[in-house]
Image (cartoon, rainbow, N blue to C red):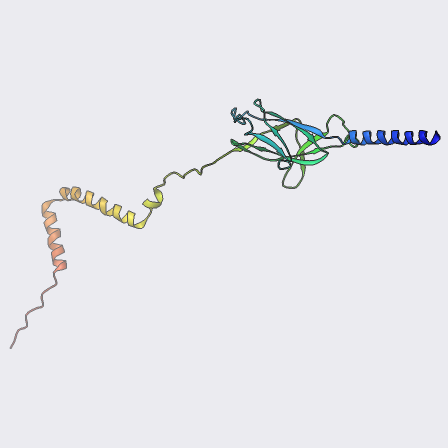
Length: 203
């Protein structure tokens, strides 16, 4: 009888120890919502198109129509959360699920944070509020046409000067006096015609 009582006590102690350990490290649920302040239509795609992924899809949840989500059975440890959406890009959010035995506050077992360039952690509010980083772009935006590179080309500048002279010269010629124009033409003719050599006189 003593041996049976001893075995029962050991079994009871082992059961209590197992329950306490499993209760201290039980998985938690992660809650949050998508911030729609900038885009009210964000994550309103057909059901299943906007999802929350933890650890690359190890745990998943569908974003509800009101923007909220809940991921169940997330174990103790460090995790990464991302949002898969066809309408926007989201930056990943890191969080840690604490063990009840080591947590100071038993009611706050999910600790979200974000790391900066110096690897320092910045605490984030919980439940999570996830904001989109940028809208999703599926097509490359074509640059607007710019004519300045063509207008700065030397050939285009030369053609422009010639066109300007062709348009302006007739107007300038009308304003010039006919007598002065004849004098200029005679001078230009004398410049273009070489002087004749003087005749040699034979003795």
